[in-house]
Every structure is written in C-alpha cells, then in structure tokens.
Length: 189
Ligand SMILES: Cc1cc2nc3c(=O)[nH]c(=O)nc-3n(C[C@H](O)[C@H](O)[C@H](O)COP(=O)(O)O)c2cc1C
Image (tube, rainbow, N blue to C red; front, side, top):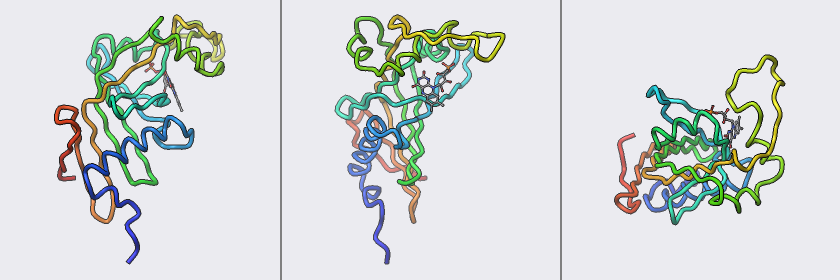
C-alpha cells in the first residue's frame, strides 16, 4: 500500500499546525499557494466582493494575517463599514482548501512606518497611484504610479475561524475557532 502523503490530515492538532505552516510559507515563498489568497469583503450595498492579494505576514501565535493595500481602494471602503473579511486558499499539492473568517483592523500612518520602510521599492509603487484605484480613466495607461506612504494601509486580519477541507482517499473537514482556543472539531464534509 502507498504511504499516506498527508498524514497530518488525520489529526486535528497536526492539521491546525499544517494550516499555519502553509500560510507562513505563503509569506516567504512566492510560489506557495498561500502567497496569493482570495480576500472577500462585503460592499456597502451588502454584496460580496473577492480579489486576489499577497499574503504579507502570518502570525500563528496571534492568529493574525497582514495584507497591504491602498487606503483609497474599494476594499478599504468596504472594511470601514463592515470590518470582517473571508480569506480563501486552495493548496492543490496538499489537496487542502482553507477558508478563514477574520475581524479586520486598518493600520495606517505611524503604526505602519516600519512596515513601509521594509517594503521593496517596487511594492511601494502599488500604494499611491494617481488617480485613485478604481477611478475611470480615458485610456488604459492614463495613470501614474507614485509611492505614497499616506496611501499605504495594512489590513490586519485577526482570524476568528479556520475551516480546512482535505481531499484524500477519505475527505476530512475541520473547523477551528479562536473561541475554543483553536482546539478544532471535525465536520461532515
Ligand atoms: C497576483 C495578484 C496579487 C495582488 N496583490 C494585491 C495586494 O497585495 N494588495 C492589493 O491591494 N491588491 C492586490 N492585487 C489587486 C487586487 O486583486 C485588486 O484588483 C485591487 O486591490 C482592487 O481591489 P478593490 O477594488 O476590491 O479594492 C493583486 C492582484 C493579483 C492578480
């Protein structure tokens, strides 16, 4: 019989550790699936919106993730009204889907000076373009990329639940809640 390639999926605490290992890999490895999660927010009209982002930090002990964006972007407008987000990752090599719910805090100005200073120059150009992101322009390239620390915001996601679905010979689905100290429970897939 072939060895189980994902033995961690059989045990709740090992599965939880694997989830954070894969999220953390996303921060450090540009080829890791968790590098580019989908971030979903709720618009002021109460509709869902989803977009790809880069995972910039993952802190297992705090249960927190960071995403960087432009303060004037639509997602920030969404989060000012509804400060909750969902995050989705499909890690194909691990046969693992992650679905996270989080409370989101917007960090700006002096709170993010150190993070801004450590961001590569090319990344900084993503924050501060003129006109603001999402504005209509006459031609496709009628915009300038300007690195502006005043437009830089860190979305700090305090994760409240993590759901993991592992597709193996047997499918396994688990939910981990901050409220019960991430002990986790199995769910019918
Ligand atoms: C691979 C990839 C990575 C992206 N990373 C980010 C990111 O880290 N931050 C960000 O604000 N937008 C990022 N974007 C752009 C967003 O998907 C989105 O188009 C943009 O932020 C505007 O979204 P909004 O109008 O919903 O605010 C990325 C897009 C792609 C395709």
